Image (cartoon, rainbow, N blue to C red; front, side):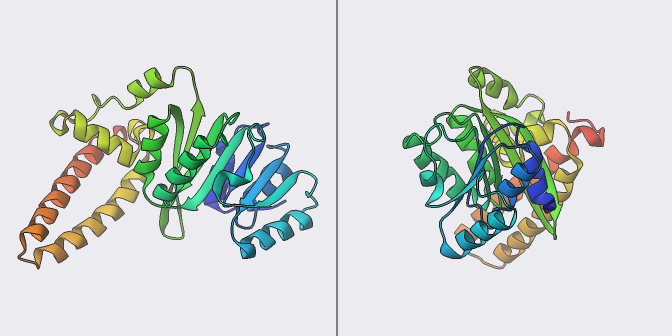
Length: 260
């Protein structure tokens, strides 16, 4: 039985049992191989654009004896998928901007017709993926965070729902955040940090953002060395962002502290 990394295992665990999966940017096809091996998915499509990873994916599937159940295809993003071929789409290991672009282009071409579930793991730019899901009427149902080899990854699961607009309205309600942040900034923070992660007070979220705040502090110190108005303005903006993030983290349920 194939053993997955913590990151890929987290993704696999969020795929609903019994779903036909299309894994986009599948690399070595580890995820679809595991899903079919374990019986979580009856069949899968492994899509890969580049020749090297495509060959590796085909080798993996052949060695697992799953060529009849996993179709390895070469193509750009969701181009490998036809409408109705998959119940779920997984995309992992790329930036949020690229991921949102792949989803937009695929949706416009009808590639997501019949797809009921998306499991997405952006390496950066998680807020761009959440914004896409929100704008396109997908309901965010799960968010997980995992640390692996010194890096932090967020995994998002979204589904189609006839009540998506109403449920998303509740999900992105900012009333549980510190009142001084305001609705507009609060909405941006929810998109950036994850509404479900924040609401449940995910402990790893604090660790991830402590690391991010260190990076932001370093940038601020570098900007402070410049006397240009642009640098000063950018530093001030970053400082405001940092203060808001710290204020939100201080109010996580796990901290048992007051948000007033």
